[in-house]
Image (cartoon, rainbow, N blue to C red; front, side):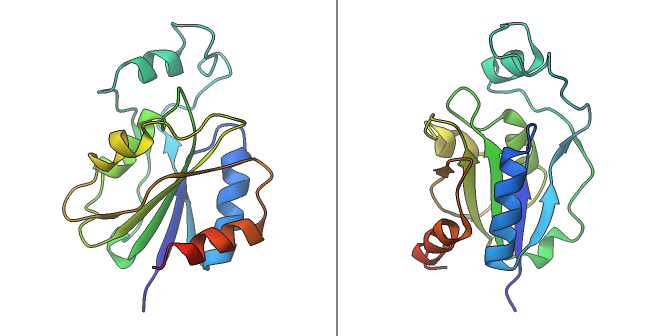
Length: 160
């Protein structure tokens, strides 16, 4: 029997809301990707080039530590990974997550939230962080008001 995981990183709650809706649509387990050191409001100030998020995003090798691990990742065949768009790509903590597990033989499907920015080069920077023979699907951005019906149509169109 195929099992699905919806893992997500969210600072403001927008991606969390979408991940919860998606988990209900796909009947999947939910996992919140939490940084070992939580982000403060000052850390997330993208207008400050010395803020934590700005420093991390300007260094493609940055890998913020994650608190906790998915229990028994091996049981999942399909893994949706959600995040907000930062600087037109996924936050580097998502690379940390992908590099922490073996995704060989799994289907990995990134999804993002953003007020207006597209996914940019997200696929390019994330796909390389997956080990083994991963079935990668292109990232998809959703607005903060995406409904279950929109997510269901997207999932059905993936032909998993």
